[in-house]
Length: 513
Image 1 (cartoon, rainbow, N blue to C red):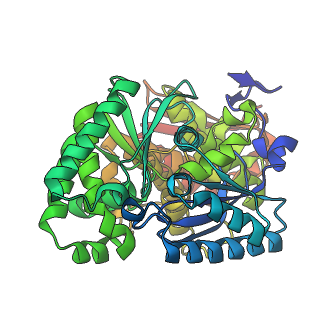
Image 2: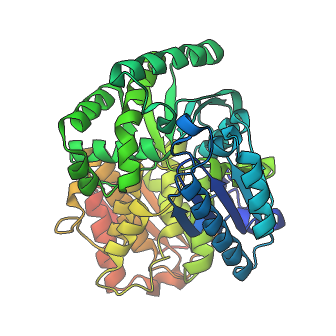
């Protein structure tokens, strides 16, 4: 844990975006030429937790029919070439220094892969890297580490023509292996489902022999896995439709596979908002997932929206940037860019922390994030600020947040601008919190709502201080006499609301020096 000159709790060091190494990564373009799609992503903003400045996918189907012909799909080649021409033109218009372009299973396995690579490079002027399965697994795992820096477990990335496994632990990628378990490789096997299951079982034996027993978390990367997660959300009537960090277990996977088998694929596609091309592969991917879960028996399963493209960004980061917390860096960046008084979040953190004497490091992290975000939506119409805050916290591209943590953060920020949580369109999401978490979010939000009125506060300034005596349930605001005028009628009302949220038996203001 690091401290500044005021002894401020700050385990994350100085803001990352102030570092020249981070600014050099402030806009990075990558292209992933896969078996099913070609996608360009341009990352922008705080380098440790980037925003998606541009994100476009073209479903080209390069690997369609390769199992029979051994060659790339002709129409897929034409569409991929047009896509890359467009992406290069866009990169030039965005003044990107270069595009990092990688091609995966379809181009490395196809008989005409080298020829097509040469054509792409000649006609677009881009350098295309055709990576092997081991490198694909490593980059996908690094994408997971971008969102979960201290995560451990098994990363399973499924594409159209291959499936990669990689273990992660202590912020590093360990053993990894590739396999031909992409749906495009085996969906048309003679003998139907029975032969497919036999094929999958045989390939998994090879994977287990190399990877060993894995009983930790299983991270699922890839469009087919995300599509299955969307179906699981529909089956469960899950209220928060955010795929990143969505959790399942073995029983949920089993039920969802049954759900897919029992329903019309076109109906499911419409319900889940999945493309027809992707949905056609889902039943085959589900057969793979069932056997992966049975084989490795993970303790839980997490969906990762981060994969090979995010892994390419992670690849360019020095280690000290990789070690940062993606949530805190994103919140710091948002405060610096959008808050009226950058730095006030840090002062608020000092102000509200006496209300949470038993907070552990994960709780302090959420409190810190809420303090940094408390004022970034001030430009929204006053009638909608609470809703905007909740939406931003629960649906924004923030890494390192469990779903309940998103709702906690959103609820705290909602209370920052609104005295009650009832009567909003978000009430179905409150069920992701238990009673204690809901109460803590209310206390935090109302403390932010009150503290934001004390505009004279600066980091390290102790002219305004909260004292919470938990045993006696007594709340005191210490305010220096020269700041007594700040405690007007509106401030008094918010102070009383905070005391009520704490179930304080007594509360008072001490203006002595």
